[in-house]
Structures are given as structure tokens and as C-alpha cells.
Image 1 (cartoon, rainbow, N blue to C red):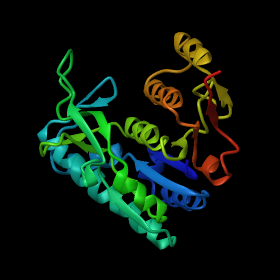
Image 2: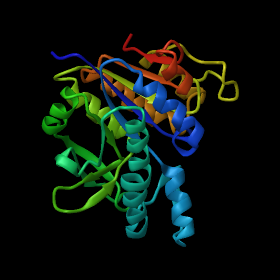
Image 3: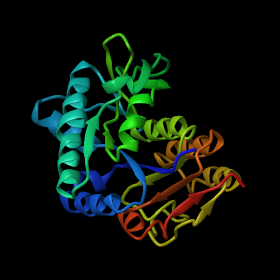
Length: 260
């Protein structure tokens, strides 16, 4: 097995606000060993869509990706947000390359089947091909991955960034000791959503179930934790949820997921 690989997914306000993104990238650059960065950018996509006169449609907090919104997602995630991050990493003397799931056939997906809701061009991951990216990482290049996939037939798809991070972490765990980090604006998983100091330092599947039943943990945090615990079951060494300060202080604050 090779050295440690840290896969960080950054999203929420951290990506959208220039000061917080700059602070995050400085901390991210200082992480020892090989690194991969997966980013979101939903607020930017919504803003650009509005300027273009394209309506943003959401169901239970999930974006409906029709053809117009897919075009926006590809432009914003794969272009505007991705290349801005790459440029800032280069300014920090870090070799970085911007990728989507279509580049180097990195992440394939299928269009989500229509059930109660038609999510449009949203992709559910079916496979990860790490071969070419693995060589980049060994040469100290940082892949910066936008939350876009492809179906192998020429169709781009919009895919949840948390899911992409977990799928990449599981694939790379065969050749690296992988740490998966979710970085957003909160200090970690909170026992009281209104109190940013109420960080749950360690979270097990049993506690997770208890907190879900009591609605302490709800909404968008649930799929993030589902992805995290699944990654632990599939060979990822550790999963950590924190904010920019947690990244900058060497992950000494935040929520650590564990299987027991």
C-alpha cells in the first residue's frame, strides 16, 4: 500500500465566499502527503442561472437538472469554480489540474431513473477509474474534481459532490491509506443545530441512528453521513467532518466517524 491520501470535499459557503475559499486553500495546501480536492458550487450555479433567466427548481433540497441547468452546471462547476480553485492552488505553488468525471474516464454514472421525481440529468455513480489519476497523484499533482460525471456515451451528468468524494475515496483505498474529509461552514456534526459549539466529536452508526430518529441530524447532513459511513465500510481509513479552521489546525477539531 502507498502513502496516505487525503480526499477533501469542500462545499457550501466555503466555496462561495472568496475569503473563506482562500483561507481553506491555504490550509488544504498544507496537508501532508498526496491530496485530492472535490468541490461543490451550487450557489454559484443558481446565481449564474438567474442571470441567464433559467429557473432553479428544487425538490426536498435536491436540484432538478434539466438541459438548461445541466449546461449551467457544466459551465460553472467544470469551468468557473474549478479553474478558479486551480489558479489559486498554483498561486500557492501547488501543481493542480482541474477535472470532471468525464476527464480520463474518471467517474462514470447513469442517469437517475424517474420514480416519484424526475431529477433530469442527475448521475448515479457506477464506476471509478483511478489509473491515470493515480499516476498524477504520485507525481505530486493535485486533482481538483468538479461534481460532474459522464455515462460513457457522450452524456454529461450532474452528480452530488459528497457522493463523488466517497466513491473516489473507496476506489483509491485499494492503493492508498485514504482519509476522507468533508469541509463546510459548520464546525462538525452538531448536537444542537443552532449551537455551533455543540460538536459531536465521535459519531458511530448507532449514535447516527439515534440522532436521526430524534431529528437532531436531518436534511442534507443525512446523505453526507450515509456516504461517510459507507466509505468506512468499503476500506476508507477515516472520515472527518469539519470547517476551514479544522482543516487549518490539522483536523484537531470536528467530527470523526467510526464504525464502533
